[in-house]
Image: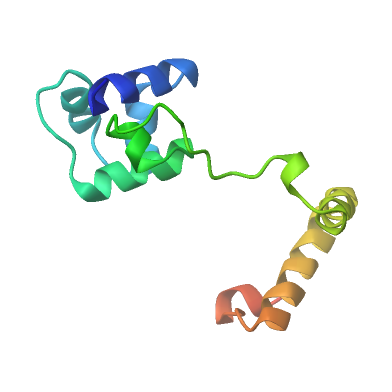
Amino acid sequence: MNFGLKLKTLMEESQLTQTELAKSIGFTQRAISKWVNLQSEPTETAILKVADYFSVSVDYLLGRTDDLGATIPTAQDLSRDEREVLELYDALSPTRKEDLMIFLRALSGNSSDTTSQKKA
């Protein structure tokens, strides 16, 4: 199966329109249509963005394997501590979630001017 058919199948399974996908990955609906209808081949950048969007491997999209190669971990893939962190995070208010993200970014050294400034 080629890229266009794989893409069409993924979009149908996700009940996603060409317009919605185009907006999400930064391409035009016309480009998506051409890929799905086998009128043009996507660029490397487009293939990577589609793979990331659907959490599948590039090899799957290119027909090199039937294994989706999903990259998003499931609950079973998480450690007990990771599951606990997610449960605690889910229980927080939106303001506390924002505070926690600022703290974590600062702790990891990934803070930026826009995310580290709290609202007064």
